[in-house]
Image (cartoon, rainbow, N blue to C red; front, side):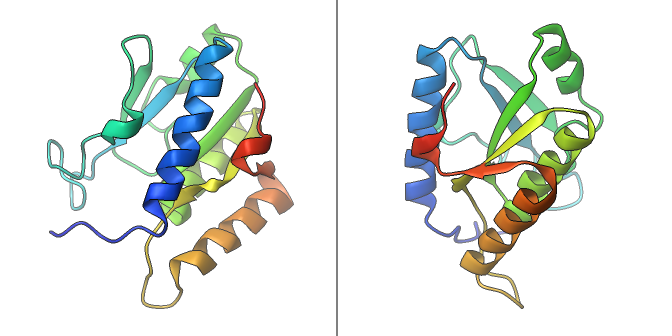
Length: 157
């Protein structure tokens, strides 16, 4: 399968990279979700499964392996966050309509204060909508119900 063309991928990576640096400077733990789909894309071990080198984890960071859009489903993330007394999660990444949206909603349902990085998630065009429309739609849904949607440069730790 060929890698889809994600909207504004370089910009999103740059925004997330700056936030990661800011969080590390403040001593905030960084969690990565590494997704694979046992029945499709991306396959475990494929190039698309690999974490993006520009924002690759450091040894102290935590990688959560998941196989559904929900980062909490069938993982120990909630337990780890509770142990560290984390109350607020900042979420960004790939894909706006799937993993990002689902994880924001689930984090809200688990009682976390959710911050979606407004300019820090992406997707690709589908048969109905352009990526820009999908991103804007999910920003609005999260902001209306599940958390705050904040531009990356305005997020503090």
